[in-house]
Length: 165
Image (cartoon, rainbow, N blue to C red):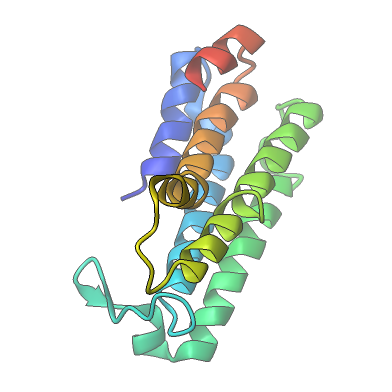
């Protein structure tokens, strides 16, 4: 669906930024999201055979290749954001802040933490707080990081970043 990169680019545009400059960050966000879907579909997680009406990666290529594809996407996302030839005219402090924000959203505080609670809740009827925690961590934090990233990389003021957040 490419929602996260679209939001990254839209927030950049909202603060007067040049979306071409931040395309690597937008692409990295989609790569991270795609890795999370590949891993989420695995038998050890949600064990889904289909995503968006098509067979999941582990059904087409096998579990090992699906794990490696997800790992490669996650690694390549951070490689893309740190390439010296891309986003050259963006302040390195801002790039580092965005990489930090995205890594936090993808890590144990974010998607991974939400997935842990999701797995722990299997077979149970989760209460509102648990369901909110799962949705906030698995979905909302990376969306927020996407919005913040586009703005920060486009030299948004703190007030603009706060308003978009």
